[in-house]
Length: 200
Image 1 (cartoon, rainbow, N blue to C red):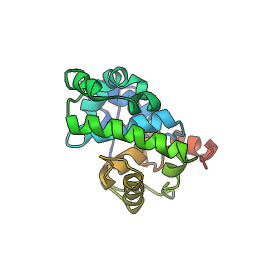
Image 2 (image 1 turned 30 degrees about the vertical axis):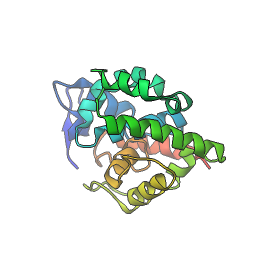
Image 3 (image 1 turned 60 degrees about the horizontal axis):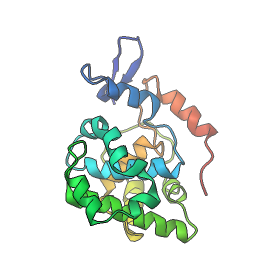
C-alpha cells in the first residue's frame, strides 16, 4: 500500500491523490474506512458498489448526488415501492448509470431490506457481524469475510453483492481499515472504530 504526500503535507493512500479529481481526496479523508451503522448510508453504499461493478469508483462518486436524487435519497421504503414507471424514468436519467439490471437490483435490494426489517433484523447488524480483525492492510480484492457477507446478503435476497463488491463496501464502511500504514487517516479511522458501538 503506497502513499503520496499531498500539497498540504499529508501522506495519503496513493489512489486518492488524483490532481484532476479533488473529490477523491475529500472522500478518502472524511468517509473511506470510518465505521458506519446508519441503515440508509449502508444501503446506499451497497447499492452504489453494485453500480460500480465493471466501472470505476470515480465514475460513481462523480454521479453520487444524482443517484441520491434519482433514488429518493436511498430511502428504503420509497425505493422498495418503485415500479416499472420508475425504472423507465431511471433508464432515461443521464445523471446515473443507466443499467437496467442494476436499477432493478437496487429496487429488489430495497425490498429485501424491508423484509429484513420486518423480520426484526437490521442490515447494520448483519454487516458488522463480518468485521475483519485489525491488521496491517494488504492488497486484495476480496477476503473470507467478504465472501461470507456476500453469501449471507444473497441468501436474504440482495443482488450485485459479490465478494469483490462486498470487500470494497467493507473497506469504505470501516469494517476493515485499509488505509496505508503511513497514511495520515489510518489513525483517525482506528480511533473512530475504537469509539464505535457495533450494532447488534
